[in-house]
Image (cartoon, rainbow, N blue to C red; front, side, top):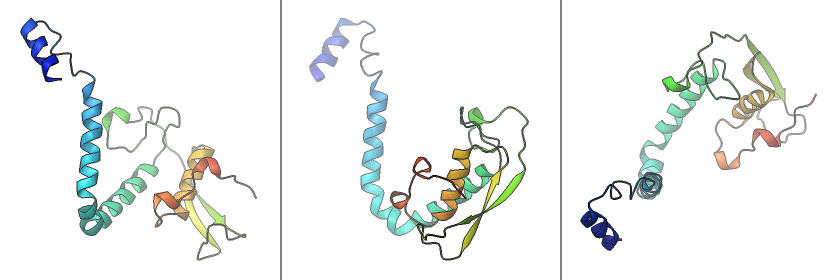
Length: 151
């Protein structure tokens, strides 16, 4: 690798600047994995709970407004490029989700989940599952595509 870089530098053309053009994604992945490996114990023991609360608060704020299911743009978002441009409001509906067969192990007979009248079925499923699994690890949750809604 060093020989290749040295030869490109000696040639003096623009190929040296393009040698690592696609390396950004590789560097990003390596850095991400390295940080994950090194910071796991610190995050788990020190700041993990606070990060989880921050994530839940962000999720609650984002889910308060409509989100385009196709483009992913939302009324309430942190990224200005993914801001929903149309002035669209949705009425909030409270669903009572029951689990008569105790598949989810709910502590009560039902839970209340707030959805918007403009939410798609998949978005409603995601909000229902988020209400059911709000304090469980992501690895223990089922996905919205695996859930069938019925009476």
